[in-house]
Image (cartoon, rainbow, N blue to C red; front, side, top):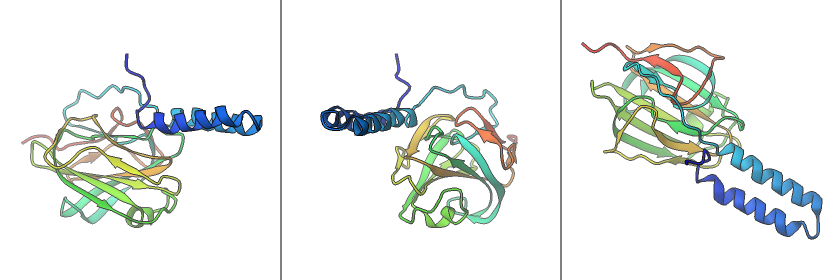
Length: 213
């Protein structure tokens, strides 16, 4: 039976529980705080299974969270032209596992060091530490997913590399403790969300790909 907590969380939770055990000898209050931190760490790293939409055109959300903005940029990396941009904010209470929005081949990956501004602020999109993953679909379209660290998040993890074939809904990375995820789509994609909507990674349809010709 699969445990619905990602393995990245166990070492950190174990540290807090061990510290709570030893600190209990001289401070029960500190021990309780450390134990609570251990429990919250397990909660933060939860990783449930998700039902992936059967619609072949469905582009699923790459993250759990709240839609901050839906717009158009004149030039998106990897896509090399105009693109529709969807920004998602993840609070510390959201699941932070990132999911592949659409099946295809990873042909682009870039890491960019940066600042740690509050992830809900627009400047975080350009200035914060981030990792980008580009996927080329079977039809030749390009989709870019950007993982962006936030004020508390200090580590962005991406497990895929160029050359990997990925499947819609598949786990590809995570961001620790509060962050932002952005999705850049071709201009012919039909966006199905608006600012304020709450989405779930791998199960919420965030857009529809253009019909195959």
